[in-house]
Image 1: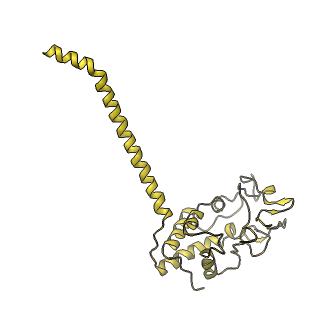
Image 2: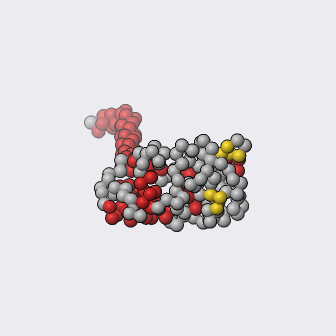
Image 3: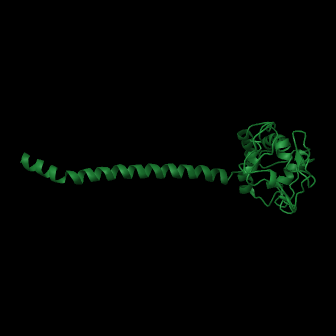
Length: 215
């Protein structure tokens, strides 16, 4: 009897081993699927921000956002006129480039002629980004001279914010040009808080009702 059992085990060992390997693979697939679903849930929760109105928290958050938006790293590309601003003192760009219809300059003086895909090495040399531009002529999205009240209202108006709904406003915190503000090249000051702090304030403002300060 013992010999017969041993023969059966030997004969079917390959089958037992295959079943074991398949079981391990199935477990791994299940774990990977679970991890994937968890990541998707995190993305969805950010994309579908739940709004719970709180005017006090909202205004406090926007005051932090406003400090960043009015810093040279943001305001210089959101001028009141058609010439971008430059430097930490936000003076008119010395080369006097013009906005143009698409916000990318006019004729031979295109933004991309000097602003390369990456920062040019050296102090105070042109910062870079593959999509460097001003807002287009039909949607100037001016920051310069705006009060906190005016800018908050403007940012929530699709007719003035680049046709952005809530989802696009959330995503804009991680836009390439927004992120470039925290990598401006040598010789330039950074925004008054980290990008992580800015994004937290931005999402808090939106998720608490996007209230505008009184002034």
